[in-house]
Length: 77
Image 1 (spheres, rainbow, N blue to C red):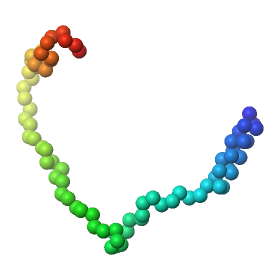
Image 2: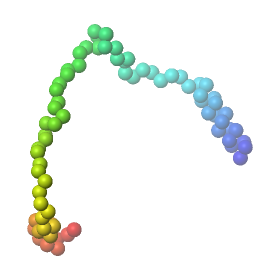
Image 3: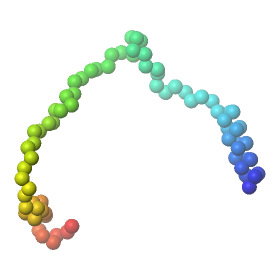
Image 4: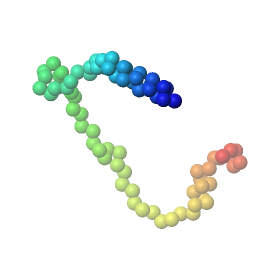
C-alpha cells in the first residue's frame, strides 16, 4: 500500500514539474486597443413581455381539471 501511494505521489510530482503552461486561446481584452473593435450595444428591455394580471376568485378545481384533460377520457395518463 505504501509503495502504491508513493508511486502515485512521485508520478504527480514528475508530471507537475514537466507540465507547460497552456497556450492563450483568447486574446486579453483591452478596451483601449483599436484592433479589438467596437461591440454592438443593443437595448433589450427587461419587461418586454410583461402582462398585467389581476387576482381572481377561487374556481371549481374539478371543472378546471376536466377542461385541461385529454379529449378521450381513459386514453392515458
